[in-house]
Image 1 (cartoon, rainbow, N blue to C red):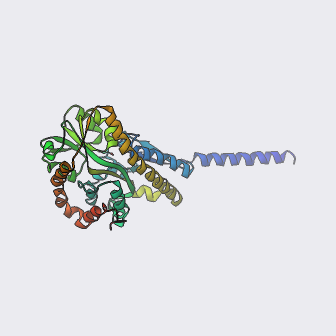
Image 2 (cartoon, rainbow, N blue to C red):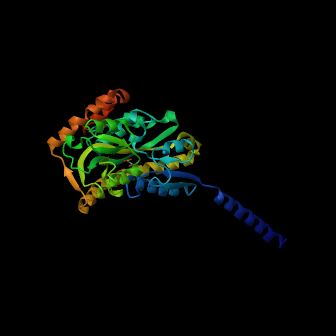
Image 3 (cartoon, rainbow, N blue to C red):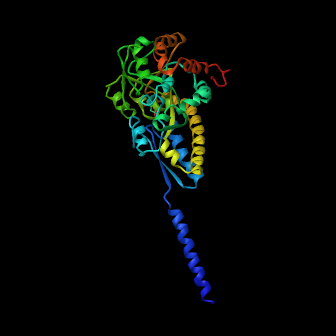
Length: 338
Ligand code: SIN
């Protein structure tokens, strides 16, 4: 009997150890998060924060792998890859959804939002939130919006008035609205992936591009563009997306934990976006590599007058009411411009 008790304890101990090992060895759910920008950007930092928060909230049962700098997929392929199950989360610019829906083209209309506060008011409104479902028929779910910021125009020539852009080649994202915007100032727009922009500028295959301070800084566009016009003419924001198949396949508890992590990561990333717009502009100015051109009110009015007719051109696809609501969010009194 005295020998039996230690034997039983050993067997029970062994079984317990085995089952713990089995639980620990259960494969974690892996989320591949693919994006195209550098890690020191709002999206790069948001993705890394999301990875950290998911590990914390799920106790390691869900693992996020972040692939920055177009390492895994460029934005032209990432949504197809998501539908095939090769990537679980991405956050393409809102300008890159045109193959999936017309309505998100709203966000590309030039001079629609005056600043990120107006964008927030619209995105938090009922209409803004409904737009996260715009791609659901295609098997994708919008988990939330992320800011990068307002776009500036960089160029090989100083751009003060719309005529200065005439005949110049500008790289754009894959958006019909952005194409129309540059045609409106008699420039030549070229749809090219983000990963090619630096080389296109460096080799002078194109004359300019439009982007935010953080992308211009982190991808060193300012080193190969002698002029940047602070135009704030458009918005670069993202929609974080996943596939219905992946999201629906997560157990309820894990899905709730991952969503909570995403909401917190987005709030963090949105603050980074506001900070970086100021810091990266400052770093570019201090570099002495490029001249930052500030527009007078009169010069800015000329750009607005030249580009605003694009709104009418896309009114049918986007919806006049939606454009009007978004525009009204510039009014600080509009809590939610529905
Ligand atoms: C991004 O910020 O994700 C890329 C934007 C671009 O393609 O210009």
